[in-house]
Amino acid sequence: MKYFDSELATVNYIEKCKTVEIIWKGAFVVSAKYREILTKALEVIDKYKITGWLSDMTLQKIVTSEDKKWVDDVVIPHAFNHGLKKAAFIVPENVFAKLYAEKVRNSLETAGHKFMYFQSTEEAYKWLAD
Image 1 (tube, rainbow, N blue to C red):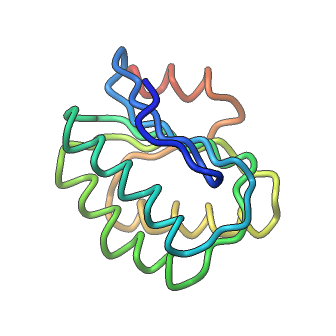
Image 2 (cartoon, rainbow, N blue to C red):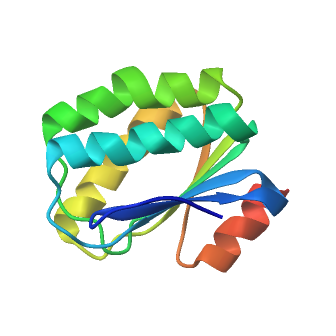
Image 3 (cartoon, helix red, strand yellow):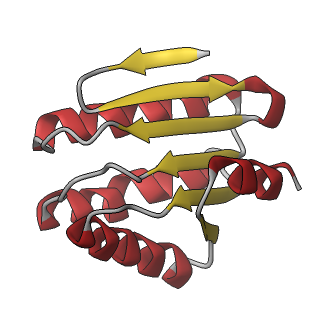
């Protein structure tokens, strides 16, 4: 079910596997819009008791260090303190977005959370369903 849509990304609620899905569209990342997308994803977690997170970062662009810090300080703790168990990421094409994805992975790993990178959403959903 589509929960929120913008030029930057779409946030979906996938009921069958209790997952919030973010599909990044490749638009230039503006801080306020980026935070709006992730705030909507947190709303899905809270509203539907989500246990899985899938971020299709294939087309995602560069994210600022300030926004990365906000993800570390706000998004990750909120998500995992409100029922999230696993986070899956589809590997981005953009080299700078890959670096950002690696930083997110490091944050999740440091906090002891379950995460995995995938090449396809099909692989990711299989892992999230386990």
